[in-house]
Image (cartoon, rainbow over all chains, first blue to last red):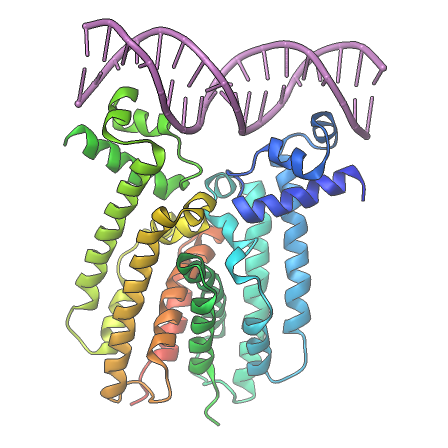
Length: 186
Length: 186
DNA sequence: GTCTATAAAGAGATAGAC
DNA sequence: GTCTATCTCTTTATAGAC
């Protein structure tokens, strides 16, 4: 792995663990084993490196989600697979957590990949819900876009509950509750 | 308002806006108009002051929520009132956002008020759902604790979606989706 | 109680040698 | 491309005068 790669990977880890505000160039250098000079040679500065890291994480999350959402099964089963997919719950969402970072939200450039990833997820989920409505699995009165937002919010909020209590149990409870509400009666 | 009060209020604002990691004693002093000496006279340091601020915010949130949850109406209506209560959505939740702060989560003392507040909310909501089940407003197959977690997660995650997109719309959509799923058919 | 002085360490970067 | 030196500002205090 080249130096720029190592810098990006270390930055991704630190952004996930400590957020943008809590991540210093020094910490990135220590973790990556790169020197000061290397970092400023390959990247313009902290925001530039963070942007590369966030974009990488966003791409990866999209690929992971796509693998589950495009999988086999009925619409309900695919949503269930998404909600129950293996997650390191207590670490939180590497994309969602960035929305609580004041400097990320203040920068259109840094926020863009976050916004696009979440928006893309919402569209995918809305499409699946729509499919479920057509198949009669979900009630016709449901708004697919709204249900998609509820699903995503349950996941993102589940991380908050889990981290507050220090246990993944609350995340799992929230997911089970949502799945019970979505469960086709037929 | 005395100096300790002003320090706590300024800290509360900054914790909400920038989180614990993103809030410096200097910024608190500037906002409160207090001097260095005053702050270290009344508080042991940043963690001590933050603890006082977090406790205050937690108390206030509890009081606000109680006002809505103990209000009039059927269980469904009270949950609806909680979900739709006026919020400054783009500012996020002053308690929930702290779960994304590494230094808060790492400290049992700082995390405690966060955990207790969210836990208390969950119990209140679970009680209301249970009541709704007894009245036949919600299906007997629903687990009140799980639904309570889903409700709280939808709110907390709604803030994430809203802040990602820079608009409160996604929060509202998630809430409408959840209310549609909870809506009694009778 | 509040003020100013001092300070060690870190944040975030630039400059220039190699 | 990488390294070391340097620099300014901020962070998070402590000490002691008033």
